[in-house]
Each structure stands twice: as structure tokens, then as C-alpha cells.
Length: 325
Image (tube, rainbow, N blue to C red; front, side, top):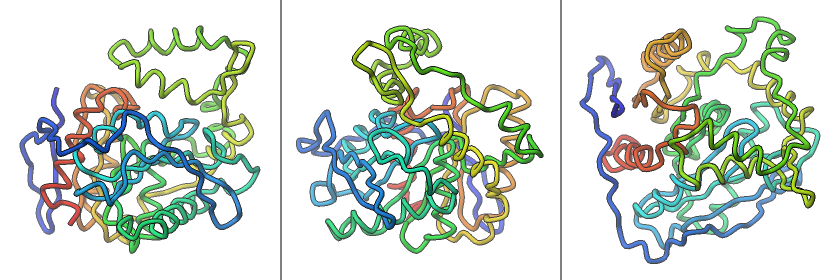
């Protein structure tokens, strides 16, 4: 099913027909199949890995920065990043602290700290090329809440945000006590599993994903010389990040955000989780001055990896239609 658009235009709400168009391509001769990698240093000396697919000088579109979810990594954005670059946009994806090939300190994992990291990355990119100013930021899951926090704290630095099956996550409503949340959401122990065994599990669970998307998931793990894996994000740091997400309440921020927000949530029919999600997003639409939602139904949590063409088309349509202007 194609995603439906619900857009709030103060003071009324209007429904818009599906707008996921066939992706348009520009002159993409300078867009490569693999990004270039660099490290950017943030305020406390932590180095974050950034993957650049195209630069503003090569791109007639807008600058875009991609933020992954909890325990994920920048490479899960490979499909959408490549497609958005082909559409003419300058695209960078980053590994957040503790994740992927970025530094892994034991501090700085509160939501405000991670938002400050993103702000520092935006400053560093702008120092490299002035055209990186005023980017669009996209974040998935925990990353969706992060881009909402960035919009709240550093809205003057961005033109808008896209929250991909995230942005409205409020774990305290489901788990009033932290220990309850910790028990329910502590990840399974994967360290020591063989690389090929894990890959086969992921492939079996996501039959409609591309090999590129499966590769992106596997980059969540360090591939050891003996053929086994271990998560880049340690369990201790995972739980620290989870505690920060549990403490985050984006519904308290909507009235203080002035930039446009596009939500692209995943749904599974009308199950209990989706019903709650629809209510949370409707509350956000009612409070934000400029917002829109594009539902992907049915879709996985990592819908940007599952449907990269469709997702990139939705984002590009919001850009070219002037939603983020």
C-alpha cells in the first residue's frame, strides 16, 4: 500500500492524496556507489565518522544529514543516501558516539548530548563548505527523537526534520518505571555468534530487503577475525542510551518547535502499537506549526532500508513541493 499524507496547515487539517512519486534523477555523474569517509570532532574531543555521498558544490538540491537509530549505524542509510544523492541533494550519514566507527566514550549519551553532537557536526560541515548551512536532518527511531530534540534546541541551524518511525517515542508511557523498561528492552546477547549465522537470521526475517539493506544491518556488528561478531555498541552503553530515550518526552516540545517536521511512521494495520502511534502523531500534528505525516503500511521499523526508493521519493517530494522552504 502506498503511503498516505496527512498535512496540518494552521488553522485546519487537510488530507492529501498519496504523493510518493517515481524518483527523479538529475546529472549524477559525480555520485559514486560508495561514500567517502571522514571523521569530525565534536566539542568534547569525540570523533564521529561521517559518510559523504555528495557535496553541496556538486549538488543543485539541498544538504541532508542522516541520523541512525539505537544500536544501528550510518550504513543502514546507504539505499536512501545514494538515491537522494542521485536526486541532486548533498548527503552525509553519521555514526553517533558509541556506534559504528565513531569513538566510544563512556559519557555523553543523554538526548541533549547527542543533539549537541549533531549540532557540532552541522557546524563542522559548514566550516568545510558554506553551502552545508541550513540542512534537512533525517533520523530513524531513536534518531527520530534526536532530530526532534535538535529542532527544539538548534532549530535555527536546520530547515526542518524528518522523523522515520520515531520522533514521538515516549517509553515512560509504556514503562512508568525504568527497571521495567530495562527488563523489557535489554537486547539479546549476540557477541560470539558467527557472522554468517546472524546474516542468515536477518535475511530470513526480512525477505523483501535488498542485499544492500542486509549489509547495512550487518555493519551494526564488528566482524572479528575468527568469523564471529560483537555489537559496536556495548550493552552498558546501549542501556545508557535507552535510559536517555526513556527520559525523553517529545510531546512537551511541540509548541516550542518552529521548523517543519515530516513524520514517516511504519504501521501494521490497526494493531495496538499502531493505534498508540497514530494518536501520538496526531497530537504532534495538532501542536506543531507546520507538519505532515506519510504512513508506510505495512512496513518494518527500518522502513528506509526496506523501501529506499519509496522513502527517498517521499522526502524528495516534500523538498521539491516547498514543504521545507
